[in-house]
Image: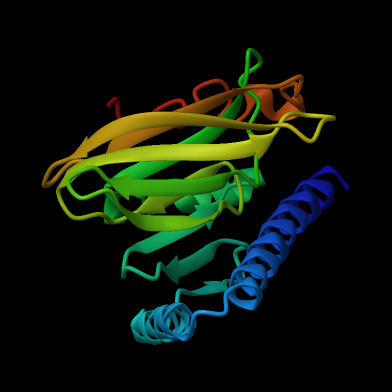
Length: 209
């Protein structure tokens, strides 16, 4: 229920923003009687539509093992999941195929958190290369070498307040970088704490950053 509530809240916010933006755009056009201004607005709308049509569409698929694999709109391959121990074991086994490993956890308990809205930005040109919901507490991606800001956004438990945590990573050839995003939360570690991948958000024997 908690995960559903978070997802519905996020959709509601996006819908409200879109409605507000659409209403403002209609207001701007209707209040102007200048044909040149109206034509400029129409050209801008058509250019935006054309640009969006040229952008690749992000694709993803949920595989039988519960993991979500896909490619972002900018062409970055990723896999996400880790809600169960079996999913984390499957992800851990494929870690060498990716060069960025993101984990979202509660502070102070260290419990895994899911459904963060993840954004990865290339700091060389401020281009967003990934922006989507994580399908579990772990997210692997394969990025070109460079400096990136990794940020996650979640709702503060029991409220409508959003909180965002960000970290900077440098991707270099032949290595895997890690970014752990620790959100203040009352979530507690479950009975699996002493099992595989308990404690360390990247797993007990995970490679150090």
